Length: 304
Ligand code: FE2
Image (tube, rainbow, N blue to C red; front, top):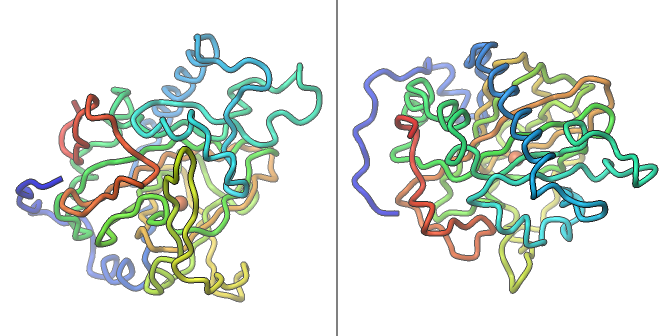
């Protein structure tokens, strides 16, 4: 991952106050970053991918679906998950199979997420992920030569959308030094009821608490700092990020954040991108690995 970084773009997109809040809080909320019709187009594309998956050879037979859970590590150690770093794969909600096994809900209402190379393999996601506005924003945030490593389409389904426990994204995409930046796009309104993000302002300055890494044929979590997160709640300083469709939330890789379960009848679709600096060391035991045949990761420049 060594190359000459491109010159920074000349038109930063952040005000001094936004830049100060990014440095202070470790996250930044940018309402209206994406037009509503672009959100709609991405949701339609995700719907088409789900339909193709549901009717294709990869559709799981009963009892074989891969489930994603942040509360059960065994769920993230199967080969389907570990091989998804350079593919487009489909992960189900833990609660998608409640009730009678033979009458599970439609796939479009049962998935937890699609990951983790939509930005490289699908032309619609590629174009959404590589716009001049995003490139300029990355530059304004101080990213020098970022490359896109991971993308996820997150459904947060009505009633069954699971919680995501408090974590730092650098736990999962570790680099030396820490260079992960997350870009979280609200494709629908995110509210307390449908499981909006919550973040801990300033928590990024406390350092990295854990690493999630490959270990043998599976994974393990190494604790780097056993100090627990403050108990969840506004009184501990967590703030809910209730945002409108089209909002972009940028997260420092060390920013502690979480989201609750979806207790409402409305979905909360979101798209996330994670970038790291090309020049940073990316260990071979990070869970997300790319086969050389898919090429080196690309930056925010023009879509392929
Ligand atoms: Fe995250």
